[in-house]
Image 1 (cartoon, rainbow, N blue to C red):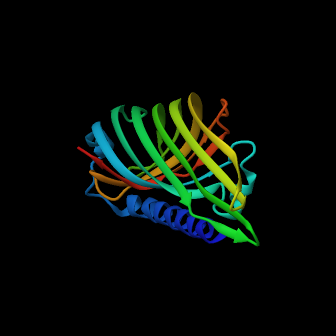
Image 2 (image 1 turned 120 degrees about the vertical axis):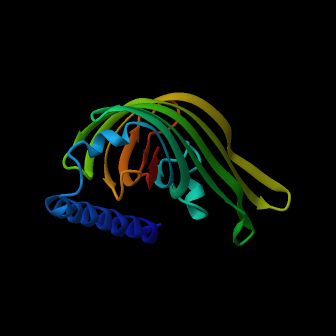
Length: 214
């Protein structure tokens, strides 16, 4: 898991470097109209990879022997930008953590799984730092489904189900991020979003992806 988040740090550093480079491009890009950003208004969609951190349900801490509470999921967004400063965005994120058994003497830990599905609607407040570089804040609500199963077998005739539960909850969320436009149509985006605890433990995720603006 440390390796995954080291990779995430490198990716974010690269995005920051690209955005800094983009500011320099703005100083030289005299062929770009001052109203370039207005050409990005309307519908956009994107795909993302989504590193995330999430505490497993109470009683499932033994799951860390098989898979931890940090992993990488997939995401998609569909939004509408009304002007240079505001857009509405829908998102869907999917996380799948599952594993077989691991053994310690006569004890078998697993099989188990941990699934998260999250669909959200967010209001995004944009601030165009330059023609190519925008930072934003967002707030919204997410409908989240969590499915966790964790079993321990102590011997061929003895087993214990530590956790077997499913939850569906509406969870408020807030976040910040940045977007760098490679062209008027394509952009790179990176953000950090925090989902507040509501029976399901709080979730922090870091979507990184590419958007296309029609």
